[in-house]
Length: 178
Image: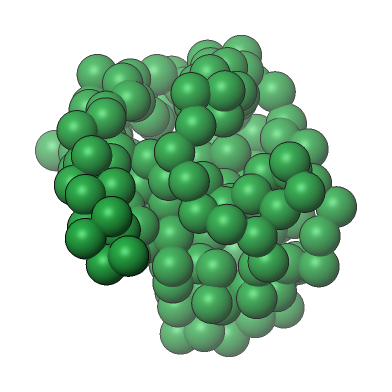
């Protein structure tokens, strides 16, 4: 059984999805054919670890898998949110810290907000907000990439980093200084 799991895990590390010019590995959490979250990283095993942290934090049921169907869905949703300015409609589930995700969705395409302002809007202490954002079940769709520091600089965007965050903002028409 362990050998089969290891082979399956190894096979999972070869798939990549094009995230606006960045090749990333994506894993999905699915329950009753319904997508509840995804995690990504440059490496497949780390994508699973990212998703595992999200699953544990939100107490998500289901199974973790790769899926061409969900990859297609994700790419369409990312295009709609980042390039088209659509507002993501999350699945009905009791995600922890719902006020944070709702406040993020309220930041329109082409705009940014500060982490401090988001913390105030969500009624969440700033240090706690930073920890919560690490467990975003729909990163980019819940647009945490639209957050900047009080000085207007970029930080965060775990696990993909500031270069990806900058690219997403540029696609939305936001120009960030170096």
